[in-house]
Length: 291
Image 1 (cartoon, rainbow, N blue to C red):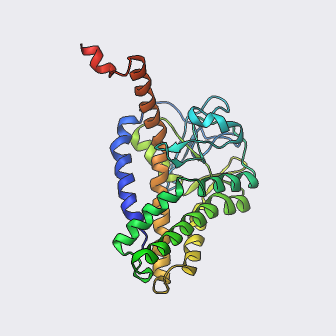
Image 2 (cartoon, rainbow, N blue to C red):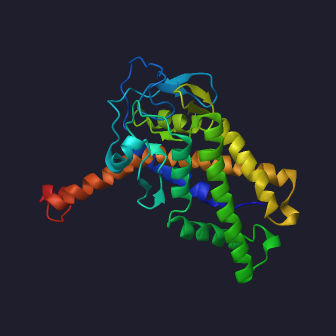
Image 3 (tube, rainbow, N blue to C red):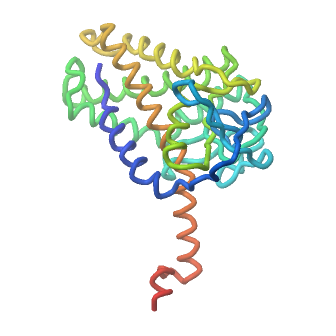
């Protein structure tokens, strides 16, 4: 059951690699880093540096001010979630910026935010796009072609997305008391921040603030891949395909956290440029300066 994720992986990863070096601000050199305490933001905030994906070294995010969340996230800062959207469209409700000592999410809050994200109006055309790619590639021949084939692909893609989101963002995080949020590092070199983002697939924060193996992500995506055998074509219900789907989901989530790490930089750049254009009456300030 090969999904049409590989193409999107390449698109998003290329985007991150192309833009990350432009928007990532180099952090201070020669300064000591500290490990975040139980009350501090872990694997993603501006607190101390988290361990790398290999678990061999710790790279901590720098400490941030108080429990404040900047930008479009400010409206939900008290709840520890956000109303941000990647590229102003895709839900990014479990990413926090400049967060420090924010309270853990309750089980109810974890389910609520995942529900809000999984059934967001933007998700429907997005899933439709994925189903269209799958149909064009004829990635699962058992679904057939035509409107019926597209409908089956759409339904399976929607189920894949929803089940995996609930498994990794609500069900297992609630049972294991793990934090499903991504805490943006926000500073340092591009390579350091990208490595930090990738490491979050293996290292997460518990509700008590301690670093833990990210069982919710690794096991949750595996469970979602196994469940998908119930509604994907019979010919694709093999152990090999299930493992392939599992790794594809983890790969897609890895690309997603890379985008989440650099998206705030991109958003601020665009907003700043828009503000400058507004101040100059809609003209490009760089052109005005040279006249």
